[in-house]
Length: 145
Image 1 (spheres, helix red, strand yellow):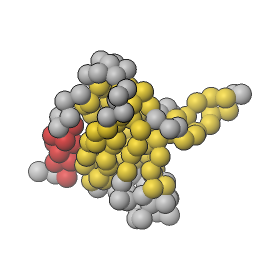
Image 2 (spheres, one colour):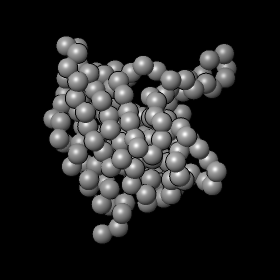
Image 3 (cartoon, one colour):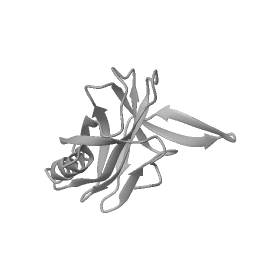
């Protein structure tokens, strides 16, 4: 079984561990030599309203980010969290919301499996974590999957 298929199956298995939040099509963009940052992308869906408040990985420092056009310029910035309205898909994708990886300890190659822990908080401040094993895809694969 190739690493990508195994990582996808592990990701789906982990995603069902918390019934209220599911993760689909999670992936990390592979890097080129000397690149020290990359992003993770996925589809999130919550049975009840919740908020993504943190992301952690042992391979890099992570932040929740958004990209948006301000004054005709595309800007990226860290956000404190991302609301997941009940029953709605929220896309983390290139050019939009995403998990940013900074200060990578080593290059991320296509087929690598990247551990990623997401933390969610509901309106009652109850926190839950979801541990994923996210496959790395080639730089040009954003539209393929």
